[in-house]
Image 1: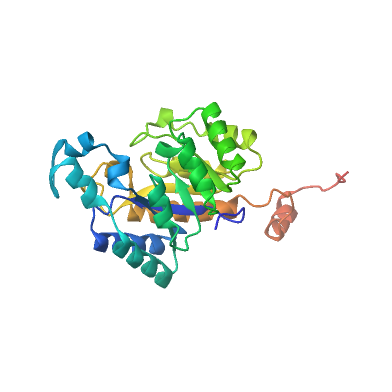
Image 2 (image 1 turned 45 degrees about the horizontal axis):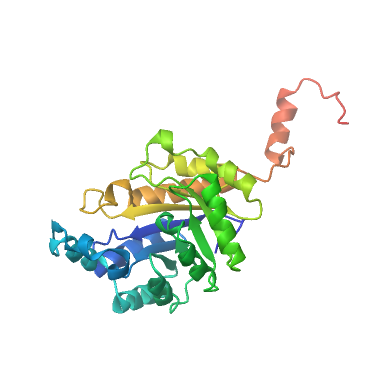
Length: 287
C-alpha cells in the first residue's frame, strides 16, 4: 500500500501481454522478482469504449482483419482475471487495473484489490469519476493531458462524491515521452496545489533517470509500463521498460530511500576518527 515509508512501485503490464495469459503470468512473476510492489492491467468493455465504426475499421493483426478483432483479442475476461488474482496472491504481489468504463469498474470490484486506477484518458469524464468515487475503493488518479485547472476539477469531483484519492500522479501522455515534456517540476506544482494528497509519477519516458529524480522530488509512487521485449508488437511496447530495466529502477529507488536519510545533521561515529585525524584544532564551541 502507498505510504510515506517507501516508494510504491507499480509495473504497468497494461495490454503488453498481447492477449496471452501465459505472457501475463511471466510478467507478473518477473515484476515480483524485480521488487515491484504491484502490477497493473487495463480493463475495457469493448462495445462501450469504442464505436461500431471504430471497431469495423480495417486493421490487419494477429487476431483478424479489423480493429475490433484486435481490441477483443487483447481483452482479458473473468477466467483470466481469476487466474491473475490467484497468481498474485500466491507469489505475494498486489494487482489492480484501470477500468475504461463503468461496467469494467463493477467487474474489477469483484476482486479484493487495493486500488482502482483512473487512467489519464478517463480523468475528464465526470460521470465515470463519480461512479468510481462511489465504489468505496481507494483511487489512484493520473493527470496526463491535463492542466492544473483540469486536475483541480477532477479532484474536486471525486472528493465531492466522497471518493478517496490514495495518490495523484503527475503524468505526460506521450509514448515515449520526450525529455522536454516530462516536466518533473509538475510534481512540486501538484504538491503545492493539493497538500492533502500523496503525489506520484507515472512515466512513459525512455530510461530510468527521470523516475528516480521524481522520487527524489517527493513522488511517493512510481508507475512505469513494462514489457518482456520492447520490440514486441503493440502500441505501448516502445514506451515500456524491459524487466531488467525495471529491476534496476527498483534498485535505484531503494537506494534513494537510504541515501535520502532523515535530514538531521549529526556527526556519525565513522566520522569521529577522521575528525581527530584531520582537524588541527577544535576550539569552536557550538552555539
